View 1 (cartoon, rainbow, N blue to C red):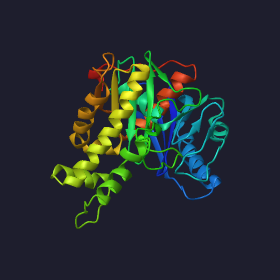
View 2: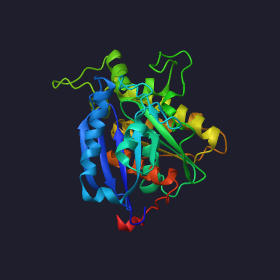
View 3: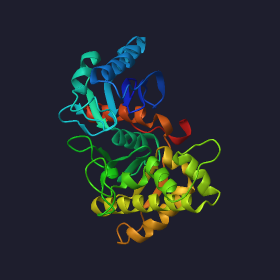
View 4: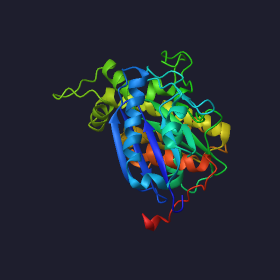
Length: 322
């Protein structure tokens, strides 16, 4: 991004975040509002406008050459619309047109949140320098994105690499997407917790029933908690192996809140991957944790904006410079 800045929006079911980001990936200005996810579409858009207004009030706004949006999906980049599953007031909502009104003559680029995370990891994180990678967010949902041939590959609608809705259990539980046995239905945080509870795990005195609490129980040896994470790892491994077989990725990068479980998740995932990634051209596939943390959506939206809007593709700084 050289001496210019990029503006970024990261839109999810919990928060709407915005930032101005420089050529090193450093966030210079932040703004954030809670997502009024259960309200009507215009109320949600008002929160987006408030974030944009706060960014635009900073003098550095004038240096922003593009604006990237990473949104919970599905998104349709070709139409500029979003229909986040967890924001029911937005169905085919014309987000790009509405944001463009505030962006002036800057190009506006829309990608799914998994693609945004992928852009961040390829620029600054664990996929840096890799020509072919799958990057995943495993959290309340499971999303992802692809790097192919050294470039971000969002696909025509901005959803390529959405591994969460690959079916890995043909007769499995119905998924909210309409399919059955999706990776997300097995490996997302809420489903890890649901399965542990159904199998007899019980929370501690604090009543915490999140996947993080299940991870703590798994580290302590609770069999239901261990089994739930093993099942999640198996589902992730099957989806990763299928993706690798299709497009020959060399690394799978996993981020998001569930990845914070560490080896409770990664150990069974890597074991299961040996059973699924068996062909010679995928047998060396690596699985590594993400490095860009909670700002991945913002940093990635900025990187995607520059890469996909025809501007200079941001180059990763030397490792010693960060």
